Length: 308
Image 1 (cartoon, rainbow, N blue to C red):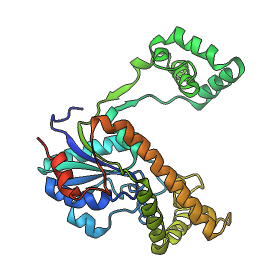
Image 2 (tube, rainbow, N blue to C red):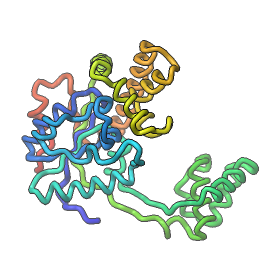
Image 3 (tube, rainbow, N blue to C red):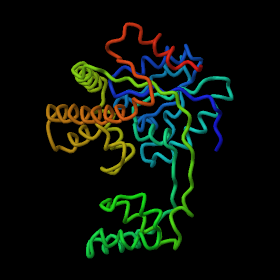
């Protein structure tokens, strides 16, 4: 895949930081269309718990990769990468700038680092290799991997149990070294702006307010509909998301409403903490603004993301 030299713009931020409301005027200033980077917003009928842009917002600025799969479908980073590439082409064909907006950091990571796809490994082979590791130790399996695929072994730590098992299983399954099988897709050129609040107290307050609004808007009823209409398995990806997971467990009788809300806040706080960890890793290669302490946030964001 070949990409144009000019980068797409990206607004990357933790949940409840106000990125969605900044994205609209920012997109208008940049003559852009928004490509959502949200692992929840891809699902239809997951509206309240994902704080999905409403119809008015989507009519004001075109959005992509929202409501593209049913809650019962499987969606992953590989599908997202290919959908994102297609969305970039669509936006550019209309003479617009692609503006990626969201907080699903694994999705942003695959955009910035590219994607490696490996062939599937039969479960029986991987289970056999896993048992071998349990019986003889991961160090012994690592030594075997070095003999059959030294390049793959060199890229792994000797203690990286899961990846060693996966690499050796791949060789056992296909009889060739990893490099001869993997398909490599390049990273997308992104000009990234990160929203990192200096005062996390404000972020925590906004998380509480946002969750409270979600309960008032009907997150519990939305979760009940997902369970009853789609008959989702308890471990279905939509029901693992913060908010939905705790609502599901309340509906299953595991705890009362107050406990549900407390657990949902904790899960959302942990999500924001993980998002901020990703952002700190990326700040050296991006520009940073404080969403709660910038008197001209829209103007500064536009200036920083405008194509030079």
